[in-house]
Amino acid sequence: MIQAALDFENIIESAVATVLTNAGLRVFTTGQVPDFQKDRPRVQVQYTHGPGHLQWANQNKLPDDLKGQKVETAWASTLHTIIVTATTVEGKQQQSDIRGTVRVAYLNLAPQLNGNLLTLHKFNLVKESGSSRGIHPNDSNSEMLHLVHEIQISLHESVWASYERITQDGAVRVSAIRITS
Image (cartoon, rainbow, N blue to C red; front, side):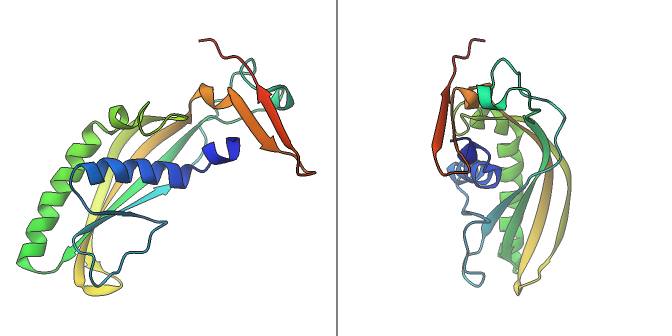
């Protein structure tokens, strides 16, 4: 259903978390609640959906009930990655190691996601736009590093191939269209 494809926060966070987990890191998304006193070191991933790029869906690809509407298909968003370690010497070394691992994983994030972990979305750009370090606000025994990446996400046009939506009266409407590219 199109509603599931538009749940960017869960979809993107889960896909990125899988890549980082495969790199050997302990990762949480905003949908999970880590035990702040025990889960160190850890990486937290948060996706923030941003403004659209005014890139509209091809009207020939849309189901009949959406034709004539401007349907946004691409967004500038932000990926926040927070590394939490102990404030000890060992924790500082772990943070350094994890920071390097995350940055290496993000160098080729799009190829790892597109067509693999993301099938209805396309991860178009990852650009690091800063980082900050400090003591974790909820745990003075934890140090954190906040990495911020600008990303661009778009819907793959195949999302419209088997479009379903729930109408106001609760019925499920299905529009199956053939996509040729």
